[in-house]
Length: 205
Image 1: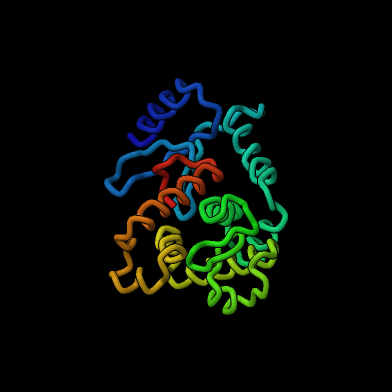
Image 2 (image 1 turned 90 degrees about the vertical axis):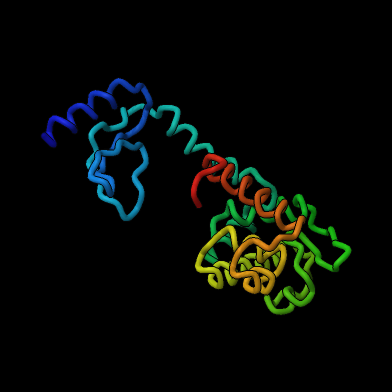
């Protein structure tokens, strides 16, 4: 029976002209699930292999690193991302939302530079000149990594804390604070992050 069921799934997969590997897995309810995404931590059997040609999926995937490489301050962001074990796309998304890549911008509250570091945060992260792009990005990345650890790698909460401060997130039971600015900021950053990662707007993080 299992062989017959997989065979039927295989016929359905072959009827789909998409250029990608097709995997079959068993769901929690015991049913079979077809997917073109191999997620870590799950067991799959590959039933259709992607053709040797590049295909649309491969072309899109190869274009994403180039898209990030073409962004402003790409080398500095890559270095900071590597040093702090963060996705380059996340740093770019924060920079885009914070300063729109303007290195000398200052806010009314005193934040400065590409990642809009507050004076106290800059001091804690070892940044002497917040208007120095390389130093600012490194400091912002260190702070964002600190927030990721604080919130168990929950990107949404880390981004909310970057905007509103970690105390505002923790004091409300580890949810996005109900501040209008933060409620706008978080979706903006996550939308850009997903776009640079090549993910759908509602893809899980």
